[in-house]
Every structure is written in C-alpha cells, then in structure tokens.
Image (cartoon, rainbow, N blue to C red; front, side, top):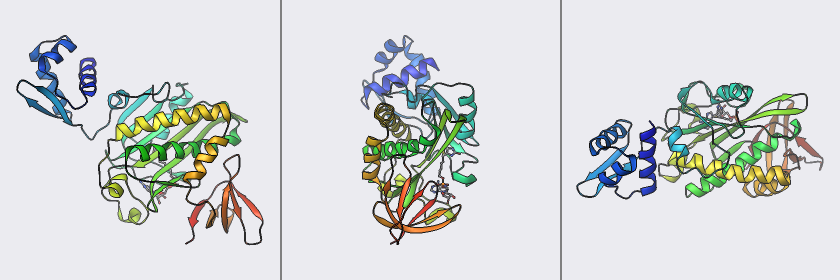
Amino acid sequence: TGIRTKLLEAFSKANGEFLSGQKISDYLGCSRTAVWKHIEELRKEGYELEAVRRLGYRIIKKPDKISSNEIKLGLETEFMGRTIHFEPVVTSTQKIAHQLANDGTPEGTIVVTDEQTSGRGRMAREWHSPKETGIWMSIILHPNIPVSNTPQLTLLTAVAIVQAIEEETSLTPHIKWPNDILINGKKAVGILTELIAEADRVHSVIIGTGINVNQEKFPEHLEEIATSLKIESGKKSDRAKIIQTILLRFETLYLLYLKEGFKPIKLLWESYSISMNKPITARTLNGTLQGEAIGIDDNGVLLLKKADGEIEKIYSADIELNG
Ligand code: BTX
C-alpha cells in the first residue's frame, strides 16, 4: 500500500494532467509492468483512469468511498486530522472516538467512516448515516477549558463547517442554535458534542459531525426536514476534500479560540445564524418557551426575550423558527 499511496500522491500533484508511464515508473522506482499492475489495482478500488498512448494516465474519477489516504493527500493542517482512524462501516464514530480518547489519542484525531449502522443524534435520537454519501466524522480534542465552556465548541464547529461548505459549494448555509446547519430551511448537518471530564476538568471533547453530502433522497420520515449538498446544489461533492477544508477551517478557529477566547467565534457565529432577532419556540426538557432569539451570551447560551421583556437563558433545547 506504500506504493499505492505514492502513486496517488503523484496523480494528486499532476492535478488532472496526464502522467506518462515512464514518469510514474521513475517516481515509484518500479518497472512499467509493475506500474500497469498498480493502475489496475486502482481501477479495482473504483478509480476511473484514462489511458492514452504517448500521454500516459490520468485520473478522471475517484471512487465514492473515502479512505485515510484521500483525506491525508493535500491536507494543509498542522494537527487537525493528522491521526485518522478510518473504518468502512461502524456502529457510531462517537463510540470509537470515546475509546480512542480514553486511550490518550492525540488532539485533532479524527474517526471517519463511510457508513454508520447506529449513528446517533442528541438524546439518543437516530442519525441516518447511509453508505458512501455523507461525512460521518468524530473529532477528538483535549482543550484546557472548564466544562461549562464546552458548548462553545459546538458553535465553533458549526462555523467551521459553514465556512467549508461555502468554500466547496455554491451554497449559503445558516446555523440554527445550537447544532443544526440548514440549507434553504432544511437540515444538512448535525453536530453532537460529548465530553469526558473529571469534576470540572475537561479530559476530552468529542465532536460528532454528520453532513449530508451526496444523498439524492431521504427516507420518508426525514424527507420534509432533511437535505443534502447534492440536493441543494445539483452537484456531487468530493467528501474527502470537504473534510480537508473543514479540518483547516476548524484548526484556524480553534487556535484563535484558545488564544482569544469565544468573542471572535461568537461574532462569526452570529453572522451565520438564522434565528437572530426572530420569533422562536424553544422546547426544553422543562417545557416550551416562546419569544425572540436576541443572541447568544459569552458562553454560547441562547438568550430568549419573552413577551414580558424578561430574558431567559436557554442551555439546551430544540428550536423552531416561527414564521
Ligand atoms: P439532533 O438530535 O439535533 O438531530 C437528530 C434528529 O435529526 C433526528 O431525530 C431526525 O429527526 C433528524 N435526522 C436524523 N438523521 C438525519 C440526517 N441524516 N439529516 C438530517 N436530519 C436527520 C444531531 O442530533 C447530531 C447528529 C450527529 C451525527 C454525527 S455523525 C458522526 C457522529 N457519530 C454519531 O453517531 N453521531 C455523530
């Protein structure tokens, strides 16, 4: 597989241009026959390669599957995604991430899969994670912050993902507090932040991100509320590329956050928020509240102004936009 990685690297550098068989064999240090065999291996993995006499080979289509290699090639981060745990099918990447975090995996480790059989949302809700269409990923961090600040990381993640989607597609996503990213009013992304902590000390934060990328349709029970980048833009996206962009945006924001606190993140978050200054209904475990979402405080807590003018702090809820 070392040779295959090198071969993919060469194609990646060639950027869609042809690579001659001779160049490849020089680069890999193997015979032309061996090159041909490796090319055949790539084809079996789902790569579509064009072969033209005298010009050589070029990749015209990558497989729909992702792999650690695909994520590593062209990754520009310092520490985010530098350790990748990839498995084609898992129950939930969160589960694996918890184990890795307990085993002391480095900050920025990611767990990625092509399919989850029991992906989960908040409060043990289901997260529909079909094969080879979405980004089902968990990020492991070890920030030195108090437990009460961890919701800020959910908001930071949402900003990173919105920025990445804007960069990689023609779409304009919006954030609905605390953890939904909507495109044209439907949910394209969900974020689940979990904690490993001792007393008030954070040991690890595990941020699960579910991004609907290339789905063309959803099961009936989700049809009305869910969407994908493909459905909204009409174009298929390269999931590995989006992951790379998310990791880079995340790293930039996270370093800023560790240095300057939540303030700069808060400003960005507010600029992407859809619920600011709008009437909302907040369903919490203690009942339902109505009012105007007037912003978030410095901890990332939602501020809801009720009809009587009183401002209520919302720590956890499902939000519905009214009108
Ligand atoms: P949530 O509790 O905010 O949203 C869950 C709700 O969203 C479900 O009850 C359902 O109505 C709806 N839903 C389920 N699947 C989808 C989907 N694919 N697209 C849109 N809406 C859907 C959101 O929780 C947090 C989701 C995190 C998912 C990631 S994936 C990687 C990691 N591993 C894992 O098991 N979970 C996280």
